Length: 565
Image 1 (tube, rainbow, N blue to C red):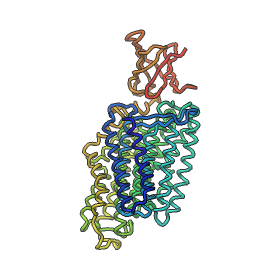
Image 2: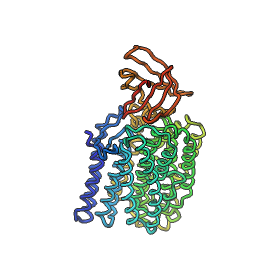
Image 3: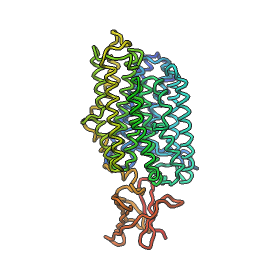
Image 4: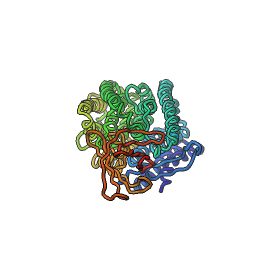
């Protein structure tokens, strides 16, 4: 079933070509695009059923040589955390495509073709296992966004598009330079084979690109104009899905491939994440409009998720993945609701809104449900995700958990303010008596997102307990000492003979690994101390082992060990 990943990428791309080529009326173009998006969701459900969530290995993978001289290949596949990010992408994109169909976007063929191309590109980002392929999808994801904002955006759309282009192009060029140097140094661009690097400059190139996309302070300057001027469904995609590409890049590339540099820069990155969390929460609290609250809350949530990623433990990593999915659903639903409010009132300004709960029970119910889940009340899925992140951050240092907890209090304040300003208080001057409740088509868009949130609230362990295969997040991503392991190593080469297994302690103090050789001296085990973290030219970890040297490296998903002469 390895072809399922490729289908997930290229089904919407093929659909985009068909939608763009067929001379159909606007209604039928939207219908066809919506059908393709729903089929994409069905393909993801099939792939999730075939996926073994008890295994940490890459699955549903395909690999074909692309540029053999440089060892570049079309290599795609999914890890457990990738499955959930691909899944939420298909669900949110389907909701946004259907919303665009419902509101009747002009130039329908171009609009829906771009939305479908965007779907395929984002899925490609989450499944690419070759660095240059990852970069190709990362860039392909941005091209439809430029056009969607620039053509279908608001009055200031050209300024918003230009700002977005400048920020993202700078980040993309930095990442491209890092990818080229990193791949040539390692002799491969394959993410499953490439070894760790100790280059600070390469690490910072990746981090800059991912921080812009997430976004994180101080790389969020493109955010206000872009989110406000984009169509509501495009803002939903930017906040809910595209931002996760940056967070995924940290999880898949920056953190595991630069372990020693992450250790050196951990405090700096945690400080930036904390500033993003607190600053974003304060801006959301002071925002004068509905979109502003959702927009700045996305900045805050990105900071919170990065706290979990950098906590460097199972709790933080599991919570980060769960919160990525939570925020994708919550932010998308809120932006779509903001669009529905704007269609009825021609504004999102709180000063002109109010009293919309009267005579509009569907709008009030949906907005209250999403808002309450966003508040992270106990028994909600956002509570589970945020609690895991704070628990993981506490293990790193109590101060990070205190900052996170304080920002979550601010989150409750700005979300309650938004709900009150839209639904309650006196009826605003921009709210006409003729403003209708949510219609059937709008409910068909937003209710599935709400049901996903309710389902995850009932069983958050569906993601948090199945994001890293066997619930071993740290051993799949990175260990505290920077040594790559796969829990118990089951395939090694030791002096030409197989049979050595390795386990690693994760407690405080110097990192130690225990070797147990069963092929030559059955039952013989020794504890060895890590004295280095890299060696050249083959990426590996050097360990002291008596009067010998043990070289531990990584070959694909297997780990090997050999005694150096």
